Image (cartoon, rainbow, N blue to C red):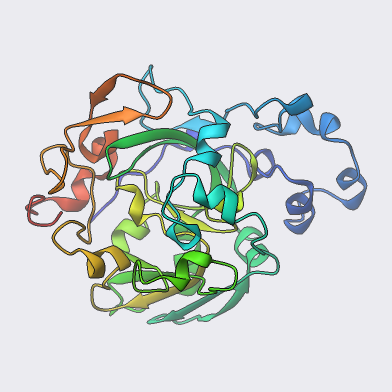
Length: 319
């Protein structure tokens, strides 16, 4: 199925997006001389800046599908209220337990039904691709939501480089398995390692992002460092974190939450206010930092861009 393309006017040049000096050097965008410059001297080139004197970073970038009252969620909430069960089930557990998580060096295996498999370092993903800043509305299945400024690369870039075969219909993602660093993996909360999947056309959609940063900084450990999936029209559990494997497969993969509770968590996980979770309504949501609830939007507000992917499907059965 054809997918809508983002207007070229909304794509900022690569040099504008890469914010950390080491990534600028690794990507070959600036020379070593400029890499030694102070953050203030780089202000004109960076859409996101680390906060000065302890202030939170400011959110800039290209918003996708946002409404006038969709203001970015504060940095403290984005980085302090997380679901990352590898580091604990409490919302503040990941920020506390992931402090010493090692994310360098980092290798991602790309394999399965593709012509160009291989083991790639993080910089291998970034160097040939435009790094983009995007502000997305994000929705969690527990009926809370955030507006998050992500930085990353289109997943489509990685897929195209891997050259999936005609028989590949799905993409499976796997999180690092390391109970020594991830204490949650020592408990039988889920079947570890965490796995997720997308249909290939979903994975290739222009909105689907491999995120490497948030608020213009490298991803904090608790947010899925150093590489995580962002699919803004789906519930948050689809956003697999700390990815170490991307595999092209013919059959629909069984993800971690599908295996754990198939009656509650389906493969598609599209935000649908008309399909309730068995234990709560999905018709409304609470934006973190707000007290009032707001109506949940179909496809999380991205229906114009992605509804065509599901033409003819029963979205109550394919939840």
